[in-house]
Image (cartoon, rainbow, N blue to C red):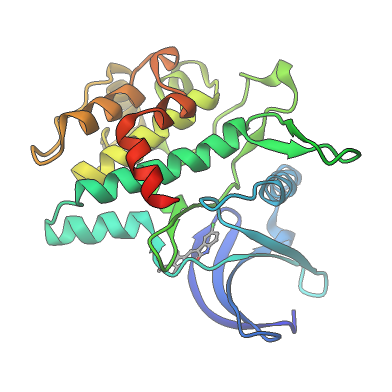
Length: 285
Ligand SMILES: CNC(=O)c1c(C)[nH]c(/C=C2\C(=O)Nc3ccc(Cl)cc32)c1C
């Protein structure tokens, strides 16, 4: 680890803390997830291997870039080096707006939703390369499974970076396609998880709806003091109206993602076909 100068801790991710580091060779600032694997169970070690393998394959402007994994056997630490996102996490952006009672501008909401939809599209529908022919080929869908404002990061230019694939899964085995157990954050748990503990790509769409709703309402769509009350509210699916400054189109797209039936929720392809999102996407290119 002599290649990197350790700077301050900037947060916590799945399995360990996130530290800002400076690469000594060129002074580049990076983020380093530091994991003490002595404390990890076998299942957690398997999850960590899965996370690194998934992150290595996902190269997209809206997904945090994975640079390298370093094993420090002397101290039993694994370090995952990733791109630094100067703007921090979306949860802090929402919290700052809530504390100041200032709503997030609708244009920024569309921009974040567009970029997160493109990141999820890469996860759900991305291609990989055939090792022999180097030709692009479809790969199994990757489920993020823990999409929440704490796992969405902003770089210096307000580009959105989906991070922390610590709970993600590749649907490489079709038989397992819809039989993934759920371990995510309760506020963003979809109705199908509560009733059947089944997770699929439409569950990521539900979580995306929760994140976009929270950017507008400055609180999650479903809040309760206990898991039982939260589960009951989610299964009822009733959401409060958004502040009146937000447009009809934004309300419609958020409600489409928060449909109780997974089949009724849009795919990332359908979301990206939305004229409002197309406008944003052009602006981002
Ligand atoms: C208070 N902390 C921050 O503002 C903050 C900053 C400046 N960066 C981050 C986090 C990350 C960061 O900068 N790069 C990352 C790559 C992967 C993951 Cl899971 C997290 C990060 C955070 C939480």
